[in-house]
Length: 235
Image (tube, rainbow, N blue to C red):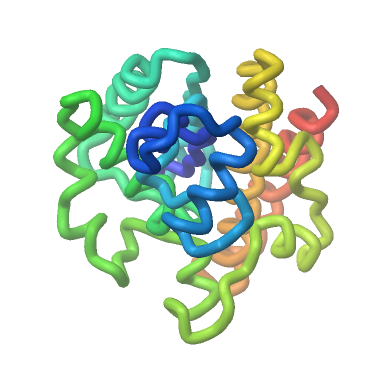
């Protein structure tokens, strides 16, 4: 079984203020200053250590690509969200992971936030099958398409353009903070779900392209996935 997942976050402003030793600057200027100092960029997007989780969505799929079950969470209580995530991951013993940039962001974030809340993650997340860079049980689409950094890393939205599937119709990642400030937690989870379905569709196409899925199986699963994506985007 594979768990295709995505996590949505906002900056942990309280933690960032402690690190920056600045409790007066407004949040916008704080993000710019922190990104320049902590991430060496001016985009306002910080490394995973400086974020907190506000939503996650996961889709369980069989090894042949057939979807089984969707799980998700959104809310203010991050510890409760992590507990829900870990409970979901404990559904299966030897699960694999599929994601887009999960190695670079989502998985480190989960580790940092578990440390913050004094929580213990499922042992599987620290297993060799998951931690090994070239593992077939922990599939990061950015690694798969870039040949582990030998080529450039593709954006998920651009992979959608490549295969003529419109992704990111609900929102963009840089809009999550604005949505959160407006109390739109359900909408954030909905956006997260769209990203998970997009990841699933790209993974299916990749598996078919390299010959891991037969054409008839791929066509059936892909048609159903595209229909579900349209449903998510329409709602």
